[in-house]
Image (spheres, rainbow, N blue to C red):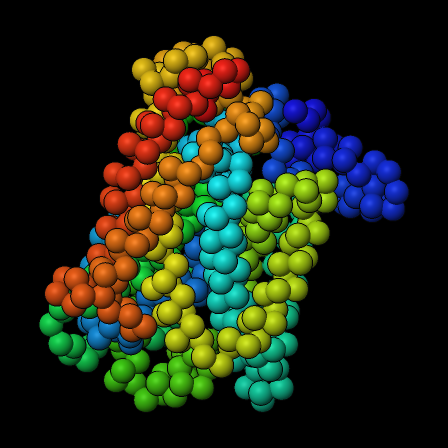
Length: 514
């Protein structure tokens, strides 16, 4: 286990680069406040952060942006729902889908582990590569959508057309990369205030465009298929935060009340997502009856729509459009941060490489993807969100089942193997031996988790109802794929994991913490 005294753990990580030019570069960057800590567990003595409100602000700012607004527009524009029906679907699905990432955020202070490192205790050292890759695809996808939308919106602010989408995408990506370099402390400071100008801008947009929102066009009655399909898209937006929840709570005090961590995280997800999803749905419904807004949307996607809404404000409106374009940087910055941790988890050979190197590589991947996808943003957004949630729910079912069932005090045959003295023998967290985080022999094989994940996704396929695929069950019920995947994965994992534990306990010399 590493040692050090910085809240970021930077001093510890710099030891890995003590020699050569890389070490010199790392030390220089540390001098500027850049965090180099990777996935190494945060020792108890470094889990000292007691400002729990940071959790609220980091999720609030990350979700209070134009991508949330854009996802809300899909209700009326892609599924034919009215503004009212869209808002009801948004509210009730997000009330449910914000629970898993908020719950997983409570594990960070107790264990000091990043989210995908913690998943090794159910998926195993090598098995965790699968959810890591899926999580990496998810984060790269969301980041690409964000930089596309930010770049398009920034370009819309130039009425002369001299700023292309490509240049806008590059600008947004580089600004976000700069913030991601600096790690935990600066990210938290930035996210605490980043939402304020965005909130003011949306209030002004509501004031300017409000007269067009009072009488939206009549929509057809909502069908169960449309409601569930849109709900699945919303789940893909919210529930996939579960793959990085504890990345931003692992420096919190281990005695932090779990209910407070959960509440801050839950409200940090729920308030901005529901608010901006609903605003997006209302504006999208009104766009169908407003030729000027339609023209803006058709020429510049959501950025063009917002530019059309704010056009009556003249030059000040253009300034507000620029602020909205920058709203995605909070989301992209923390995602770049977690991408670097994700890569180190499934490629442990790169553990000695500073975290900021991976953030730079991620930006180099995202920029060309954004440029390629910019001209089909609506379809890209819809297809991505409707697909990405189907892996996340089996992942959640597996790690939560492991924690609630197999890490319960009554199921732990050797509580004394726990590595942290902060927990009594009655705590589930006492059954995690934190010295085994990088020891394949002392972690589960991952076979039950992988089989459960495959079963969950496989059974979900006939229950999918999206524009790219309609399963035979979903033809009658609508999209219930992510719900089915969650239930099946949990039901399959529990008996298989029980068998694995009995086998592991019978092996000579193997720690019962498996």
